[in-house]
Amino acid sequence: MSDLWRLSAGETAATVRAGDATAREVAEAALARIDAVNPKINAVVHRMDEESLAAADAVDAARAAGAPLGPLAGVPVTVKVNVDQKGHPTTNGVRIQQDLVAKEDNPVVANLRRAGAVIVGRTNTPAFSLRWFTRNSLHGATRNPRNAALTPGGSSGGAASATAAGIGAIGHGTDIAGSVRYPAYACGLQGLRPGMERVPAWNPSSPDRHIGAQLMAVSGPLARSMADLRLAFEAMIQPDSRDPWHRPAPVETGAIPKRAALCVAPEGMATTPSVEAALRDAASRLKDAGWQVEEVESPPLREPARLQFLLWLAEMRRGGDTVAKENDPDAVRYYAEMRKISPAPDLNAFLDALQARLGLIRQWRAFLARYPVLICPVSAEPPFPDHLDMEDFARVYEAQLVQIGLPLMGFPGLSVFTGFAETEHGAAPLGAQLIADRFREDALFAAGEAIEARGAKIEIAEP
Image 1 (cartoon, one colour):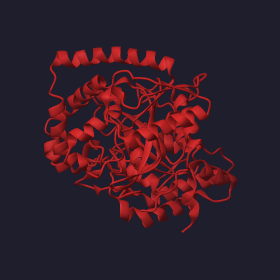
Image 2: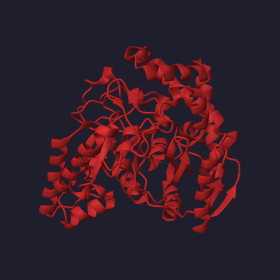
Image 3: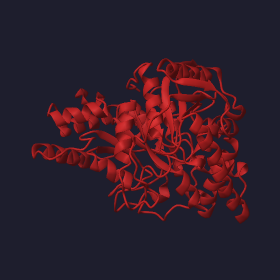
Image 4: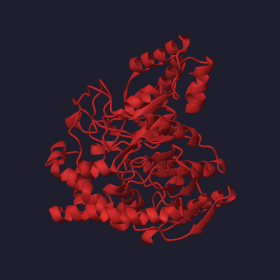
């Protein structure tokens, strides 16, 4: 098998542009990598051999004709099964949608194609993209290629597992409560939750989502380096008029003061010593890069997390008996636990939540004006033992406070890898979460690149 699958996205695009390898050769290497490792991890649940080779041939034909090539020319990528991709079922991990075949691409998929990316497969998610673990009754369970005892994260667990194992240089994910940030953390990757209005999105195969998801759900990339993450983000944010929320804006939006805040235990989170050490390591690397870092308390996260669940569950409740109809054991249990935490609101409570959201955004923006980057936990614990939420949902929920609370305000968040720690379940990846103001993903990239440059390179996992 060719080693072309080992290349980064940037290296792949440069290799294809220079003619040192064809896009077809790269695609063939990526498909061979799926053959080699996917049976062990079940990350790609729908492979696309013929389609990906045809896309690669189109890149090669464009190069031969002297046509301009996109920034991701020939780069193998994966797409999560909860977004529309023409000709493929948008299963979202549920049996009741296995025949929901998309007639056109979601804007984020269209943008990846326009950038020259070659989609080699679609990746797994829990049923309804509902958990921080990845298993469903349709596609089965995805495993963490770095340590099979640990969750690969969720809901973009398939994307993270594939990318960590060298299936594609970039994985597409979605995030409404940590679904990009946590899988990146669990699989030892870099993962970006872009801010609201950044990445255009829409599933033509389904009705528009309700207001909570419109305000909180985003698509974002996972990668093995910050450089690849930036490349993917720049490709994903290109304008598409089909998303009325999307606002075109450049990646670089002004000077970035080198000031950061560190909050090890937001609102009393029980942050474990190993996670605290990872956070302080990230802060130390930023200081070494010339940043001023001050340890402070963060703005509220518990109230945003409560309101996030209220708005998210309001949409699910409108779906009636969809969860019961699917009858996926994990989803049924998870949905029941969510309803315990967040009772059904009346209209006034729903309106109060939207009103309170505005004040919370105001508080956070004032904080981020003083500290352009906040360093805080992705999770209070190292990556969980797989499917721990089926045994102790309360513990899992409490540890994920920042993941849940952040989307309410629409801010971007970055999960940045810092290294590994030994746990009772073996070696576990660790990292830090960085938060910035809206349209300041550039601040996250600047801080993330400084942290990455002062640590070990992310290696491809061999499951």
